[in-house]
Image 1 (cartoon, one colour):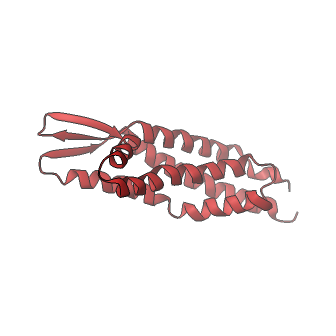
Image 2 (tube, rainbow, N blue to C red; image 1 turned 30 degrees about the horizontal axis):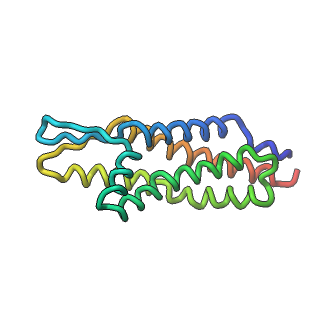
Image 3 (cartoon, one colour; image 1 turned 120 degrees about the vertical axis):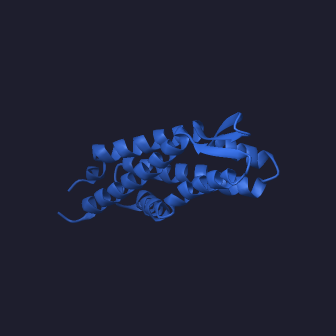
Length: 163
């Protein structure tokens, strides 16, 4: 079997879709906060992180930055790199794939943190928080990335078996 088995079109499509959805999820409004049922403002995940980091909640901002932006983009970047590599059965590509799959077990932590932030904001008595399109794109990106990474791992394992 050839090493190109790991590069099936569906896996590449899933990884590309995951990247697009993740970037849209970070940039589009993720939640809308309505105060006093009149005044409202929408924020994306990236804007929310910036607000936290530039304000008084620096530790919380850093945690959300790491788990909701750096971590998923890094994990997806590793999977895309392995998918594009010539022969991921050996060396750095194999280790990157192992790390991508190992880190994939923590993928839902990203979604959990976003949901927790929305839930915490909803606790205000004078404000109502609703999830917007960004949250759905973010979740779709995480799930598509997980499925793509697992398909990639199976393809590499299949390519590594002796013929």
